[in-house]
Image 1 (cartoon, rainbow, N blue to C red):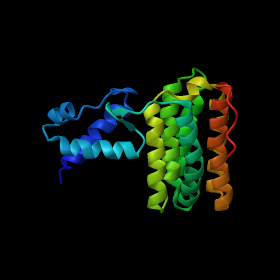
Image 2 (image 1 turned 120 degrees about the horizontal axis):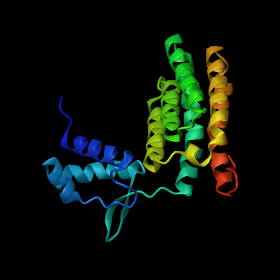
Image 3 (image 1 turned 180 degrees about the vertical axis):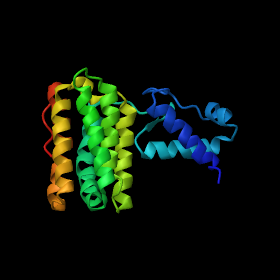
Length: 219
């Protein structure tokens, strides 16, 4: 079944925002987008409302819809949220991660380790995203999984890799990934996996905040 016009508009806008074609502050003109898609402004408006709910778009009076600006506060709030919900998603997903998925995650983490020699922050970030997707994708709670996806979408709109600002964190991150995989393979208690996953993300957040001369997250 072909996607609805609203879904097509959503996919187009989401892709252009996350890939950087539409940068922060870019004004989303309904008529222009509708003309590009060959539809009325109604499905475009519906798509923009979805993106606004996900934090990718903001709406200002007398200005209209714009791509949300990335800032330290947004990063802080997004990472705090992800630390909690992704930790839970990873713990709930762990019993359903099979040997093949574990092997895939270890291979991704090895590729990340190899990048440390001649550090490539954007590629490292891309692999980091793939690694975590393997760990949380089997989460049986669709509501938690939806929140995780929303959080990653918010990070995507920021685009610039946090590892660009804190390259020293990359080596620690690879080690923490390996430890997390060991816990999952050993079928450690869910609470231990959750806390380890949460600490992993919070440590990245705090390293970023420290680099910006800001106080650590209280969570």
